[in-house]
Image 1 (tube, rainbow, N blue to C red):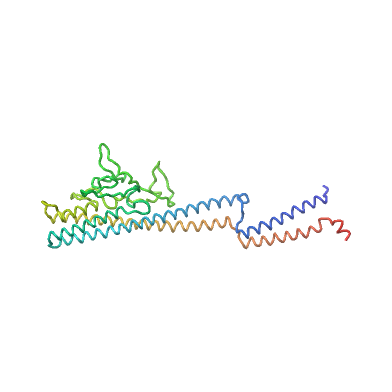
Image 2: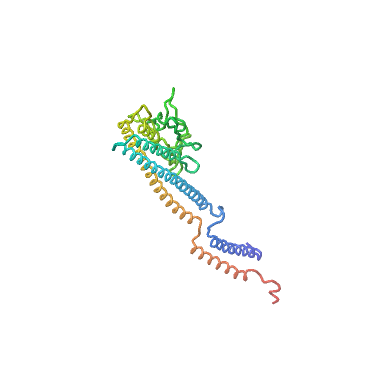
Length: 345
């Protein structure tokens, strides 16, 4: 095959452009800190990098969800601690009545204090976190608890003393005809923290998500005790005040007051148990955060391997590309023919 001068020139220019391109691309990788700027340049690693980026984003969102849940738990724990202190104060006040001989006027004063503590418990049970009521389940529009003038307590509009919990599904109901009435707006709320959330129809699998809602019924109690007293601490404090300062013709009965104290101690222990459970949930969130943060560090390392060049290796490559470029330029003086002016000179 005949090799012409134009063929050599074209091949030379092709090789020269290739050498210049190699230098330019290597320089771009060093200055930008990226192996490639378009996915088409490295489809295999680019696709993996996109997947790693997506996983990092999801993990960062999980941590944000955990922080929100931790703040809610911290608020709930703080309010339960306040409830415990209020209930302990109520026990101290009633102990003065049971352990000493005091006049009815003194009992009336203590009864008034008890009603003040009852009001504090009610306000704590209706506390808000952000734009929602902390112990209301999914009821964000109105305070979940209400104290009627007759001393009865309502939760989302239903008498607390009538409510019971189904042992099968764990939900709260009020006896109805013909079927029991499910307490409205008391559903559980969940958040995705990276446990592989799954759905069963419209319901979240509770083992794959973290519950962020708190039912007030699970905090202050519900139903009636075996002694015929309210299990909820709001109503119980009202009953205690009524028995310390009975309306005529009723008279003070120490045994009835003592019954209130016994139930109050049980319900105080119930609130403390809720605080302990919240502490366990906080520890779980802390461990989950540590695991996710460790995963993010590992993924960031993998992302760097997929997207970022090795500076030392790329610097060596660039020097080789520059050497090839200079060699190609030098070779050009022997391949490209001299012009007429070069020949005259």
